Image 1: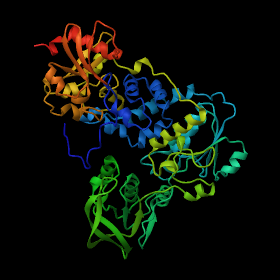
Image 2 (image 1 turned 180 degrees about the horizontal axis):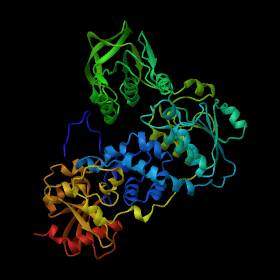
Image 3 (image 1 turned 135 degrees about the vertical axis):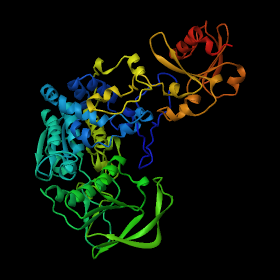
Image 4 (image 1 turned 120 degrees about the vertical axis):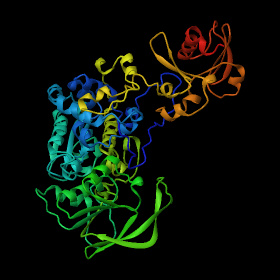
Length: 567
């Protein structure tokens, strides 16, 4: 195994939740996903070769399996507990395997849902958010029409993102899933106004327009906006560029643009960024791909003017952190030049504010389920958040559909999606690098079944697994064995310190008095001192108001684990 220093600082791996006293096992990948996909479950189904059920489970929350299986930002992989061993499970790749192998079976099983009376939805914008919203609505029985000004659905992924990232064939398959549910599609013309749609009987209208407008760089010279330029490049069938291209920006779109320039024949392709690569918003994987393809990176540079085949830049340095937490770029007063015949502005893509204004919609308003100031009109995805990821758009689409339908979507997870607890435990501590995507379920640590990171990482064995009669594994912190080294805090997927936040077993009155932990002290016989919301002495032989799970845990400790607190 070759562990290399990352290009960028590692992303936060903890959730924002506090660890619960009982049943604290959790799949951090699921918590890191905006739509909370059932990731360990479909990983296990793919491992077993059950591709149809795996894809069915994926599409319960994600109607774009090919798109997200290819270009999703995969925040889930940042949270994966496997990162502590070697490298993340390749979740995105596994999703694509399920999509490719399970697509036929899923399509054959799909059919339109009986229509709900009195509800008719119009979706303006046929990008990922619009497609997802149409899918969710139609599945729930809402008569739905999607309006798209371009000739085909797909939005920015179809018309802007380069083909080496996502193919039209993959997008067509995702669109076909939506159409299978009976959604009406109207392409090739602007959508009617909100007022006109209401007159046509639409009771719910969603603005799902994408961020098609590039931010203005505001410098003189040969400068083009990234969206229009990439759309133009995607229509070319062979290399058509010459000279030196400079892309200004540091997001994933900038990485795509720089790679496109290189592939389309530019003499050089350079990314100019006013901070350093450590502060770049682009995914590390996307930055690495660009660099591997020969794209140059110029850090601490702010463009001033393009002329005579050169780009004049201000030399920058990093100052104090700004509101985003990144250090602010500060001009040093020095300038320098780099070869440049064309500048691509890849900063701050925006939604078409004119369309919103024409319909009386206030930008940035955040009502229930993203309802706008106009009655029965909602916004989602880019139109709601500004430039958003595909999966964030899907999350918005699901929230909108739930608001329209009036209830949350429910579904069952196949029993085969859950491994035996013993099999999950057996995977721990074994290094295993990725091989093929269909085998990645074998690397998944099944955190939805068992976690126990705090147990594995504690050098003093101060966090102990207690096996209850019903088969559950609960974690108890043993106070006398802990020296507060912090290992459990480092490896716990929650924003917590297990040594302070888990139910604690004390050995002496003095130990309990010196601690603020919730826990128990056995006083002899049936008497215990227990601290939860309040600190009290109880007799276990008498009725009490302890939560049932806590009482069961305490009785199990007394009956089978007394060696942990006796001399």
